[in-house]
Image (cartoon, rainbow, N blue to C red; front, side, top):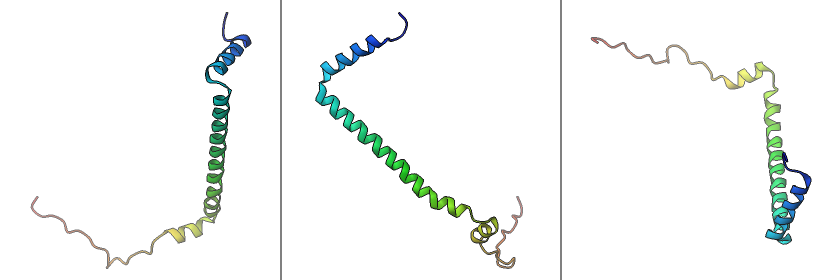
Length: 87
């Protein structure tokens, strides 16, 4: 006797039906199906939201660097810290 055979599975299902009843099992199946449906819809929603980001990232590299780089400050406007003396 190794593993679980078909008769064992059928006996287990009969016991589960007798213990919980068909109405509770029907409600459980309905709730589980609704949860799976909601999960699939949320995954599809994330794919739809990711599509505009993918289109934006497909711009040529030259355009991306122009949009993301801040203008450079002239050297006269940059502040430098003075070196410490006596330490």
